Length: 352
Image (cartoon, rainbow, N blue to C red; front, side, top):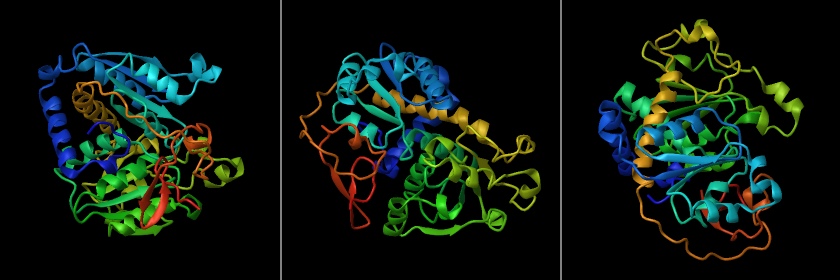
């Protein structure tokens, strides 16, 4: 693994190797205090973050490395019009690994084309969030002993939920997982995810009600309705608050259910759920730090490798208005297949 852009690019064996290292770090953290001694992580956060930003910085410090970067692009040359390519070329000359969050979908993929060091996608718009998935799988594996054969409910904004998209791609690597996709019709999973699930023969059902499927679930993965992803404020007002998990609804759930959430929450999980032993979302956030420690011990210690020259683009191939190619026109026009359909290799949107 050179970069971590999309969890779907990892094999199950690569994930299990990563989890093994993560488990060793959790059990014997002192053994890894110098694992990244002398290594430097660049933290490029073009979008607000609490858990991901803090946990990556803490993870790098705990394995002996150092960190520089920004959490506000207005304080950088981006505000002067510097391209993503130039920022990455410059930063990768200073750092050993680049961690980037960007509101544009496909930004991490674009960055990886020009970086001399590994790039980790810390969230690209409403597309993917693979390191959150390492936190999610670590939580499930640590608390349930494994992932095969589980029934997983994904609830909330499944259209814009990058954590959901990454988790679906990850769970596809395991056997016998059943998916209950719980969302209003206007916030259902995007077509590229639905095509991926069909192509891989995954068992899934799409429903609009939470309570009816609650007794079937081993894992309930709640997500917030993301105001920042809505173009129309009225559509957000119609969708917010549609799902609220409280103690009463948990009465219908299994005693060993795991209630998870990538956080932050707004109103989709009531405060009275926090003390239920099935609520593991704060543990999940801590497990994310250990998962990122394991990831950094691998990627930050790789040798520098000069990026290969790529074709210079002139216009965006993708019609997704939030795709990185819409603003960075020099990007090469990369296309891939998904479900037998041509898709943008940056953001996975189907090409017309």
